[in-house]
Amino acid sequence: MMKKILLLAMMLMLLVPVPAQAASEWEEAVTVYGAALESDQQLLDATRGILGTEESDKVEYVYSEDVQQYIGKDYSNEVLKSSIRIIQESEGHGLDITVDESMGDITEITEETYKNALLTSGITDAEVVIGAAEDVTGESALSGIYKAYESQGEAIDTERTQNSQEELETISGISEENSNVEGFSQEQLNKMITDIKIEVINQGGDLTEQEIRDIVDEQMAANGLDGLLSQDQIDRIVVIIIQIQDSGIFQSEEAERLKDSAQNLLDQITSSEAFQNAADQAEEIGQDIQESSAWESFKKAASDFFSSIVSFFRSLFN
Image (cartoon, rainbow, N blue to C red; front, top):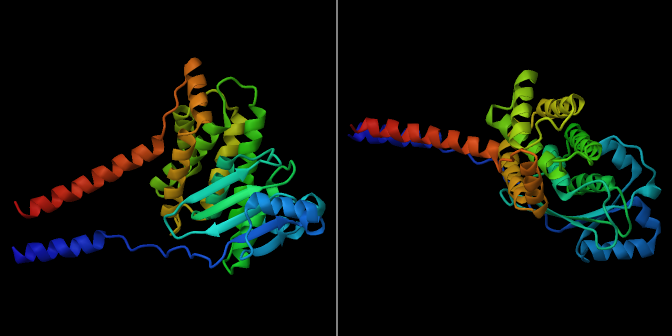
């Protein structure tokens, strides 16, 4: 009996995962303004109020060269007006993003699209406020977030940040192209992309192009988008998922944190009024949106795995 108990203890030790290194918590929040605000005190003061910047914040500006470095885009400093305030949180907190449009609209990017892009870049645990004092596209905000991390001495992988930008552009572009397509919504597309990421991680994070295409097809059907996306749009989604996979994030130590934050994003999307409206519209045209298809399949697989372990241990004492 003692030998069986020792064997059981040793096996349990092997099964307990070693926790990943926790994300560091900064001593202060970081506010990063678009470069255009550096010479416009009125715009700067208005944006400071939107973001809730405090005297203790570390303050930076994002310039055209930063945008080029992080997301591969060429903009002059004069048009960089969207700004951010970020507080880094400990691992497991999740990624909370607020887009404040009380004074100016972010015209091209939704909260969910920002979050999807940041998860792709490896940012999973933070509180972020994004805003501008006048209407802007919102692209410089992502660069501001990346600059905040580097200002705190944390390395940023520019391959991942540029992948996140391409993902953002893919989602925004497909959404614009399908703005008049009955049954389509950006909420469905963001959920579909998130489900795909989770499923790729669940399947090992090193899949062939055909395996990724199979997942894309499954998630199109699960999210009520089957038959609504063109082959070109499907191909663009496959390409960006392959690029993200090639960056290694689906297999790295961040994969579990990414998956947890992706599940939080799914919860946010499916609880939103916009998603419920999309689900109702999909139902009207004979489509069905599953609330969390990839996550449910993962939980079932995990449950089956641990049930088999319990059965094994019980057999030791029979």
